[in-house]
Amino acid sequence: MSMQKMLVSTTLIGATLAGAAQAEEVNVYSYRQEFLLKPLIEAFTAETGIKVNVVFAKSGLLERVEHEGQNTPADLILTADIGPLHDAVERDLVAPINSEIINRNVPEHYRAEDNKWIGLTSRARIIYASKDRVEPGEIQTYEDLADPKWEGKICTRSGKHTYNLSLIGSMIAHHGEAETEQWLEAVKSNLARKPQGNDRAQVKAIKEGVCDLALGNSYYYGKMVTNDKEPEQKEWAASAFLVFPNQDGRGAHMNISGAALTKYAPHPEAAVKLVEFLTEKQAQELYAEANFEFPVRPNTPWSDLLEEHMGEFKGDEINLGKVAEQRSAAAKMVDKVGFDN
Ligand SMILES: [Fe+2]
Image (tube, rainbow, N blue to C red):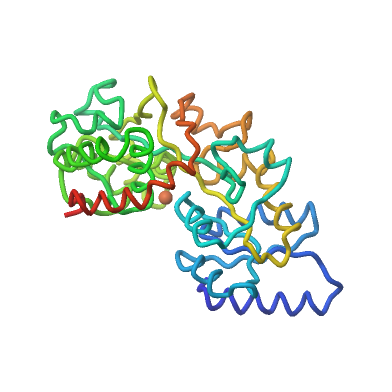
């Protein structure tokens, strides 16, 4: 649905509600897709009677909250990455969420120190490796990607893409800028081609013999192996094995999808109830499974597919805020080394 259409329907819903007895409601601006949220929202409304109005968009939502200022109808911002959550805090658009339920359900490293953003699902940024041309164990860390033995063998999307900015940001958080810059330059010189396409396109390139290693988010594996609409993606996935990097050290770089409460939220209590609901066991299972992500809540069962293909792995437990802080330095570094040129 287009943003304009969505706006109209949101307004109509608002008008209808104003006419009825003051039913509780929450307004959400979402970068997450409708198919992911819909079943969760329906379950939330069924349980609490609170109506949820959602504006879905691919970009521009933070700008919109900023522009609307004190008059914003938005209570919550839902994102598919730490980047926009961190940006929302930097732009002073959000308020802390104080909730014992959330603090109990979401590990500290997946929450802002002041709870100005909350992680709801997680994913690892992993290495896809060619089954035909790479031996198991031959590549084990992000640092290994800089080894000259991989010259002309690595594929990735743009260094400026939000997923890569967070990965490079995590390298800076762990190694500092000077060492990370050397690493990034070495990875650049190992690229098989100019960065292009999305994460899945890199796995396709492995299948086609263009490269041996590719960076990609973990959930794309699930999306490819189950893709009945485009069955060729099953073959892309089958050509690679998954490497969760740095298992003998800090663990794989993790990113989150998450939520932030707007500073001028008209319905802050109902909004916090929705975030609480999303961190509880049942919603965590549903939310993570719908997109082959991991629940952030400990002791939540994983889908069979994740259990089978990803099993137990170690994720980096650095606070994601520390990683997000380095994203602008990462972006400058990508330009400086000419990573995308
Ligand atoms: Fe994605």
